[in-house]
Structures are given as structure tokens and as C-alpha cells.
Image (cartoon, rainbow, N blue to C red; front, side, top):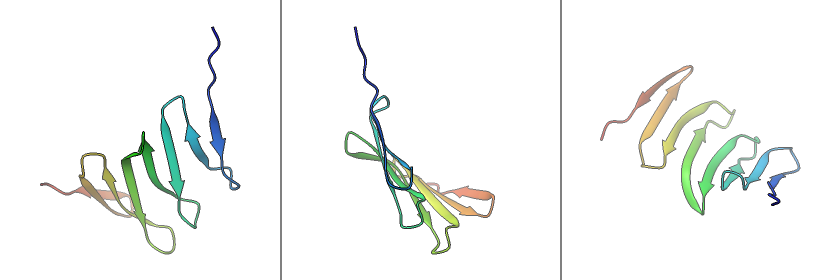
Amino acid sequence: MTFFLQKSDDLNSNLKIDNSRDLNYQYNYLSLLNKASRSGVPQVRYRYTAGGEKLGVTDYSGRDYDYRGSFYRREIR
């Protein structure tokens, strides 16, 4: 039995496809992770300032996490 684990990188050596986890990754113009998707469904989205500082994350359930430096706050719905 043979298993093939396919991983694909972009020109900046960022991981774009990881078939072993069924994940696809997208990056912004600063080469920072923008979105991770599984089977076309977004699992997480990241937001950054124009300078690359992380502002927040939205997870697969729609929960938002806001960042201020090394601190974060979860939005309660």
C-alpha cells in the first residue's frame, strides 16, 4: 500500500496545499497567512495592519478574536 502526501509551496516558500490535512492556505501581499480552508470551507481568517501587525482572527464558527500586541480578546456572541 502506497500513500502520497502532497504538499505544495508558493514562490515565497509558503505552504499552500497540505493534502495530509486537507488544508489550503492563502497569504497576503506581505506573505502572512490570510486564510486556511478545508474542502473549500474557511476554517480561519486572519486580519493584519498594512505593516503586518496581527489585528484579529475569525475561526470556523465565526468567533472573532481581536489582538492588541501580545494580548487578545474574544468577541462574545
